[in-house]
Length: 263
Image 1: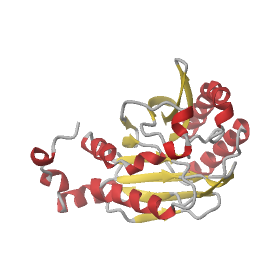
Image 2 (image 1 turned 90 degrees about the horizontal axis):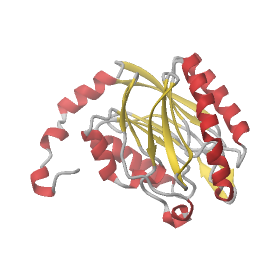
Image 3 (image 1 turned 180 degrees about the vertical axis):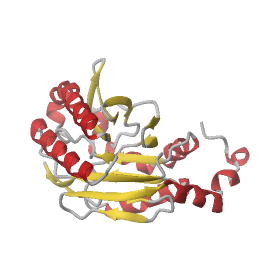
């Protein structure tokens, strides 16, 4: 990871089912943040078409084209880009976050935890692997939306060397405080940076509140979105994270022999 890194959360109102319209919006936003020195940009969950369950297979078939377009732009802008899209594989559809490093697809993560409350488990299959990937901006751990309610996942990524957690989301009202509190807790307890990008606006019957967050390793809010479209930018200071971990050495003070080794 660079000593000082500019990061961005691209918060926008996903146009339901309209891939090309959303892609155009994303490319324009990436151009703008790159001009401001951003090196890592995180997009919302399922950003190409939203949770358009009835046409998921059709949208998933378009995902390779979307990734190719994003790779081209990320190469031109020298950006690392993370965001989730529908992926079809062997007759199943996954909610998959892709990590693009300056034009190269370097990793993908299939959402582990299905939000059964809203029927996600009826349309999508869960992944079975975690991801910490080395990139030009550092070691990134990847999670998606509902995953934030499962601290075991974040501790595993921290133990595997994650420095920044990238979390695309579509988190609707009325659970704004859950979103904010859980994200800050994951940053604090693991002493790492978080870029959490939520969408905003209304899709189908759901109202999304935005409130994307850029968090320090102390859990401090470096930037926070409102309920409208925004490109949030903050600077992560790697040395501050190192010094904070040395000051309060939670990793060394763990007692896995008592409560079990996290696999």
